[in-house]
Length: 272
Image 1: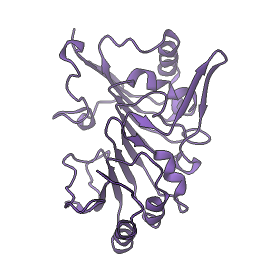
Image 2 (image 1 turned 90 degrees about the horizontal axis):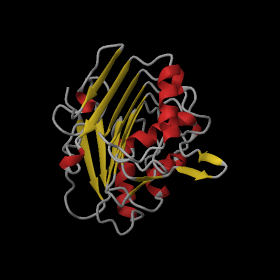
Image 3 (image 1 turned 30 degrees about the vertical axis):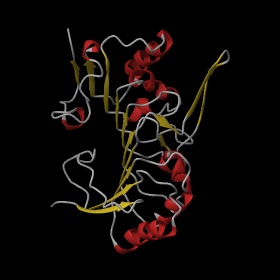
């Protein structure tokens, strides 16, 4: 059964459906996707646009929400208009200088039953501080989303885009982190200690000669893998640094998101 898709755009130009399949685990597509494109938005508080979002929620059984070209400033009106939706999947896709404000999920009063989240962005709502007293983190996800099972981070800035719900992640089964600060972002296990008990699949895509991760962070990652009680699939995908940015290891044909590994295996892909 194919998904129905409702398209909304801030501008008067007809919105276009996102061309890549959603990053949802398993092979069952959502019943009804809502795609909201914020491209070239002067303000997302336009009453007619907010009303169109509210009507889409009221008139359809939306179970997947996709936000494209997310606005850099908080948009509580949009999140309030999304009240009443019951999505199990959320995707937020941003340009390089656009901010992924996933902390704005706190505007939703009746929390969504999210099972999977995809964040494609460099900038986000996290706050990882590093000083002489050590690392300090501030929670960004509301506590009610601590039970998310599947997370994909594409091109994260390790200081701003990482998972840290209030109280720590409680039920994360699969995490994929690719490009940019992928290795450094794995340090999120420090503020989510229960991951060592719940994570079954870890996929990391990064440079073959990545230089941005400290020895302490590498050791922390090794300790996590050594102490993990549930991990059965570990996949490392290394880009060839001589090829510029290289292939997008997430969205290309035969991508990480489409590879299903056998239990108790470690896969390493990349240049020799």
